[in-house]
Length: 349
Ligand SMILES: [Zn+2]
Ligand SMILES: [Zn+2]
Ligand SMILES: [Zn+2]
Image 1 (cartoon, helix red, strand yellow):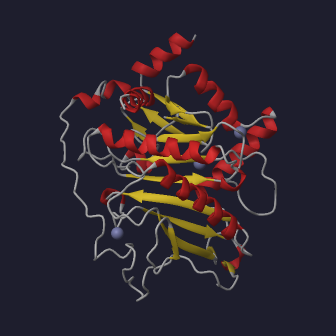
Image 2: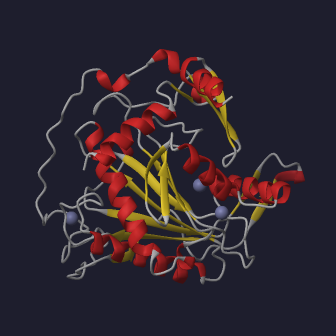
Image 3: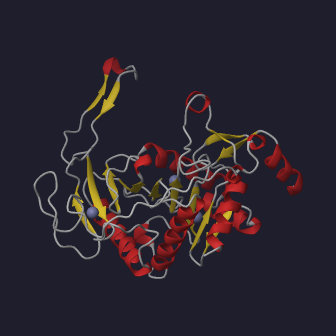
């Protein structure tokens, strides 16, 4: 039966269900069988200096608000000078005439910027393993600190890499947005994981990882504590989902063993990405942890998403327009082919 399923998935237009996001994706495998065999335009990597005097994230430099960065040696965290959210906003909810049509509410939040390294020229792919472990430990302590702030119920850690993804500065860094409400994407995943737990009395992602681990078809790389795979329902051409093998809900629940294992898999994925088109691969990535609202959230399974926009070469990007904007997201290269490509590049090093 698996064989028949495989040939349908390989050859026929079909749609796949994303049980985590509770949405569908349209897959059109007949449109491109082997897209990466086309022209690959190698773009020479920009040589960046270790220190850039004009970078607002480099040690000792001045930021837009006039403050000087310290001479930091590992990670460095500060409140975003242009924060999208503020901690102290009056709690207000509007619903004009109580008709549910003109609804708004204030959203308290804290936005921080976190540099991964004092080195302007490094990336997660080129940083040494112990340096990435420092980053993971800082993500954990930031989660702990921010989730303890009154009125904060969710901590979103994310990295935008590359100009294509709107990253304004190549210095290796991420952002941490802590909010009063659970943002839209994790809120959908919360409902999906709760429903699955209720129906099956087990965890959605534990069960999913077990299925993928058996088949190996979509696994890119893995170690004792984490699995990186192209999800069955991936929308972006080289989308990757990273799941912990152990059922844990957040950074703060990670044990001492899992820190180096997460660091290793992050380095492996980002280095693999850079080999796909021989360019620094742009992406948005982020971790999804359970809400911090006082409940146990045993249904939640810690994971990370990588969403890279590149399609066929370093310069051809995927746009979410037309049917994707108005209907359902669509992809040509199948998740299985994307996984095969990434897996071969992950193993080649
Ligand atoms: Zn810099
Ligand atoms: Zn689980
Ligand atoms: Zn998620």
